Picture 1 (tube, rainbow, N blue to C red):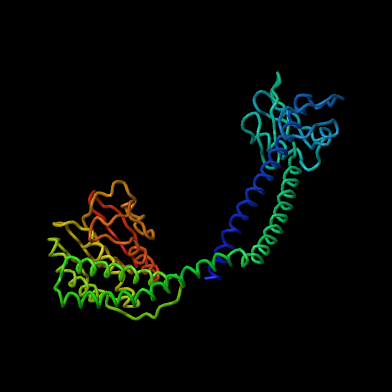
Picture 2: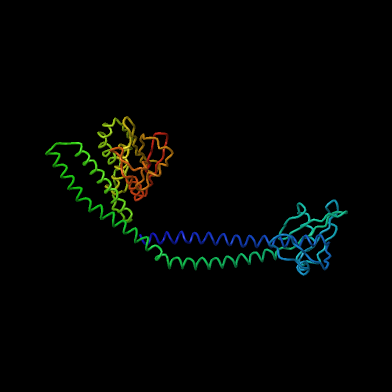
Length: 403
């Protein structure tokens, strides 16, 4: 239990740290790129508007996150220009402010542009319309990429160091964090186990005394009620002890069991109970389906589903129980008529001690404690399966176990 909780705590804590660091890296580098892109656009626009003549003047950039511009920043830009006539033919190329581009490449870039501004092969361009044609300015923005990569690398390294430090910190203190939780869970399990075993003796005495009184005085409504409550308490103890045992995550010994034969025999035991309430009990059991399970615990899962079906199906209702295979999967489906769920989520029935009757009254002799389905789901998960509930139609409920 301690190891499992520590692993879960470390996983969720580091997931939160990872998400936080990823958001920070994204925000920092996104802002960095936006700032550099606006700065390069402002420099290029200034060059275009001043027609290659840089005058001593103040530069104001109204856009946010952009650093203030000065004449030195403008003059340090590496750019070239290509002049074209009205037919798009290259008339002149000016390479005075750059050395990495030749006449041929400059003319090639000029022929590939689309629109009045954009980016092409590491250059940002802007077109200025002239009376005799166009003047195209190409500014090198490779420095912008280098700065961005540098900021990205530094932020990633800092984030990695912070992540490792956080990981070590979480591992170091995770034991202290989960220890009180584990202690509380262990005390709860111990209490349930001890209470269950302690209640067995007085219940057995009550049972024997009730049986003796029935033999001497005959069966009365009082002896019937006592017998009913003993059965309910025995079922409650069995389910509580099962949950406590499964929560300990102790691996149960398993064997190959023909669940088709097992379930057929268990359903037959409910024929009389269903007949008393005039319930139509249909079964569709595919023969010779085998599973690797703990037989007694698996039988308890089936028993809970059948008990609930007979208990909560009204007189004249229907129960359908099927066991089938589909490829490598095994499907166990129990479906029965029931009262209108009134927009209650069927999955809530798996909550421990959940009762749709919020007043928790025992208006029916068939009412339970709301613990059986919790035990059933825990049993299914123990054998690698999943137990779900849904409402296929109004007045029907369906429980599906998939293995």
